[in-house]
Amino acid sequence: MVETDDAQMLTIAGLALFGEHWKNPLARALNIKRDTLDDWMLRDLAVPAGVWSDICKMLDERRPRLDEAATLLSAGTKSRTQKNARPG
Image (cartoon, rainbow, N blue to C red; front, side, top):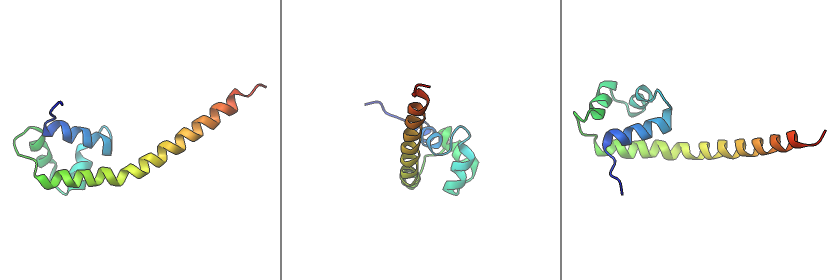
């Protein structure tokens, strides 16, 4: 199993939660200063254990909405493909 460091895990979670420009939104969601997040990324400060549970909670809260969106998009794409494939 490959070990993932804190900076990598923050990046993975940040991208999943907030997209390409994730650092400011993640800092706001965690109620911390952006500088603190940058220190964690640079490994100048250890990430407190409670932060990981907060991030996991955010991911868990988003999961149902993402699953619903994926289901709707998949169904919509399938019906559009079938509609466009009908012979004229």
